Amino acid sequence: MNNSCTALIPFHNEKKRILNVLNVLFKIETLSQIICVDDGSSDKTYSLIKKQCPLITVVRLKKNMGKSAAVAAGLRKVRTEYVFLCDADLHHLKKSEVERAIRSALKSRVIDLLILRRTHSVFQTKLSRGDILFSGERIMKTKDLINVFKSHPRKYQLEIAINKYMIDNKKSVRWLPSSALSTFKIYKVGLFLGTMNEWKMITSMFTYAGWHEYWRQFLLFCHEKHSRIA
Image (cartoon, rainbow, N blue to C red; front, side, top):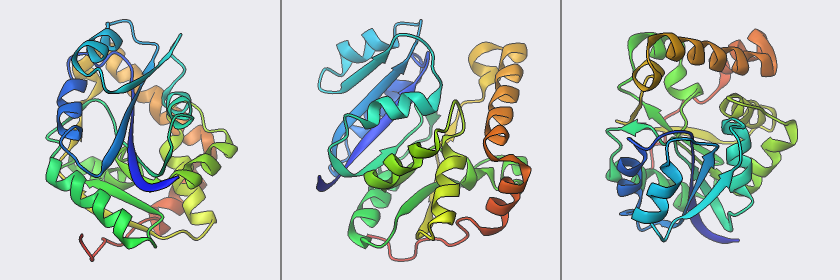
């Protein structure tokens, strides 16, 4: 593996939003590859990416397996030392913030995980530290992500599994601010289905390790901002 970074973006029915994310990532010189994983979409997002972004590697799953399975599928294609995990439904994603974070992670050599903290999140999210604990934008060493999957996270359990791995193995974790925000599920599929999907996501997270693990992460995980900006 070389000392560079691959962007890995799982998606499910994000035709209306993913090109905005890809247009930002295309401009980042420190990314040597962009891999998108279609998690069983039915809205022709796959065809859109293949047409508009032919240089992108697109992995296609036959059915919706969940975020963790999608990332695992894309991870098999990664050949760089670092990987940048990024959600596909972001708005206000800024090239300068992502580029700065990637350069900082590559230059530091001692940071094992650098999280882009969603500093513009609503108050309730900040109160639960969800702007850090559940942020989907993360730069980490590929070998560590491979090890995380040995604990078999499913569905929406990936972020909490990464956090647990970092605490258990006494890894160095820092955060940098990000203006990006994800799109609420109610705006994607309506109030009823959106609320149901949000509940499924929360249930999936806490099924992985329980409330005790959440409180451990709330108290111990990633309180320090990265100070040496590249």
